[in-house]
Length: 457
Image (cartoon, rainbow, N blue to C red; front, side, top):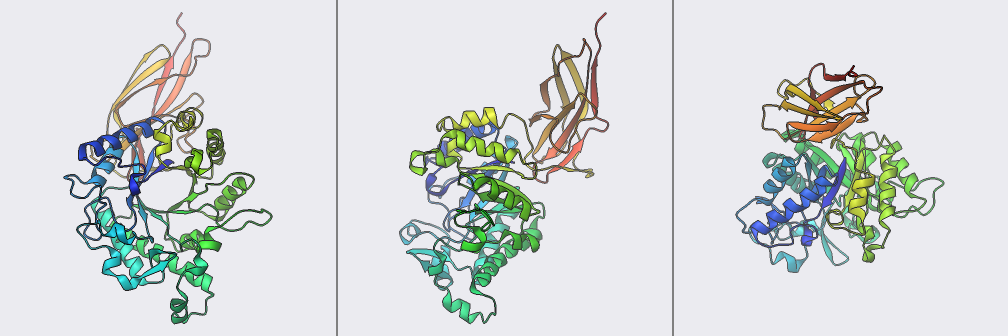
């Protein structure tokens, strides 16, 4: 996976414009640049601080989208699929909008105003209460609403944790009233896990193909023999992906590992070794900004390369999209050239025996010099899909690791460069598949194909 987080809160990434046409054009331009530079997955922020970017029956709409004639989420999902990109609906879970912002919201009553007794005030800000069952019920209803109405590939939970400085979080009374024998830290972790489980159960009832993920703090916990790890998911904010995995309540995580130095490698390996689910490593592209640390672009590129070198990690996610759609200190172009040249699929494919996912057929091959033009008839369904081309000079192409993947396209044709011939002869084998963006299922042309060119006498 090569993902970016695309923020809608405060228009950080999108939208910067107020008119409908300008918003559409702005998103299209960003997606074109992201796709061109190797990104295949969008984590699109659909909920900010208790408001959403689509017409919801549950929460009010983002002021910049309210009153428009189009559905921004529907448009974004279709735009991503058209470009062969998967889209995960990113929900910021527990923080709520401040009181002045709530006055600007129209339509559905905000959660805070509807359920004042079910929120907590902490360090001057309002939060949904992790210990209150209504929190999980409300967030699960949002996830269900999105999954039922939009063909997203996933739901991603952000800020699924206790707030910063949790020692001051006002929940002593709740803990004592719970009459639990658990230590308070474990009670808090159970509260967060209960929310994740409830959301997962809601998705299972609607569409089991929608993946549930979470954006986590950068490190899981303190690591023996490694100093200066900083704050951690489990120990500091009561976020325990290992417990979520044991409960069967999460499909993958995307860490927010926005640090550097000698702890970076140990943190990656700790996540990889602790979890059996897929781990995507989130990296801080925003750190190249002067006000965010002024990292050299090469620092982020080296981190991407380190993640890619570990075959047990599922990919990278970069925060934020703006750093990859603008020439931020050369990061965008250098990432594309150094790290994202090899094509990849968004998720590890599942070989399909599903008869509704029809493989490409009627393949024709036209060779000219060192290139071959391939054309085929695509699957006759309206589900968004990609076509993947695998090539090998040794034997049958390796379709499991992605090593022999040479092209990915949304079109029903492609021109590929053939390997150099040996003494005027050339023999290559091909596999072409249809990859379903929504399910990750992959179906191949039976038997594949081969190209043989003999030396002219």
